[in-house]
Length: 199
Image (tube, rainbow, N blue to C red):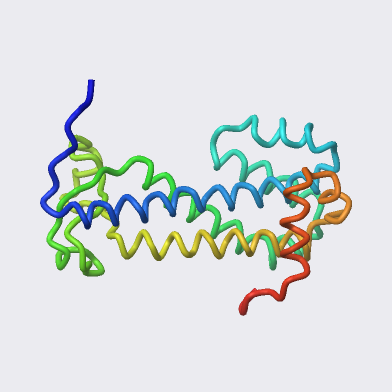
């Protein structure tokens, strides 16, 4: 049985929304991968063991909590305060963004009503049946432009985490050496390439 496609007033804009949603959700996997790579180096165990421990947690919040605890145990306090805590805050913001992407629905909007205004008439917002979210009369929403902006922040965060691994994770060389060949090659290429500006 084949279901009919939904009818959208502007299918090109909806296609653009789907595209930016897909990019944003998939980019989060790079953040989670880098979090695992740091945790693996800190645990100092075989790759398979650290993989079992890290990916046992299903939620990104629990994975971040594990990584935070490992870093606070392994790093000196000034490294935690100056280097890790700002990145941790960025991860928390990106996790919240990712959760919004997973639970909001597509809505039609007059783009000028969005804050900031949008060039598009489609956005994502709290579910229309979620009365708790709508109780204040203010409806949260993300425009295509805002999703793209946060998607780029997610990409930048994944690089920050990889460079944090190189610069601050104890025993990173030994830990990276025990990762699968493709992962080692990818990290090695990032280590030897010139860092992007700001990293």
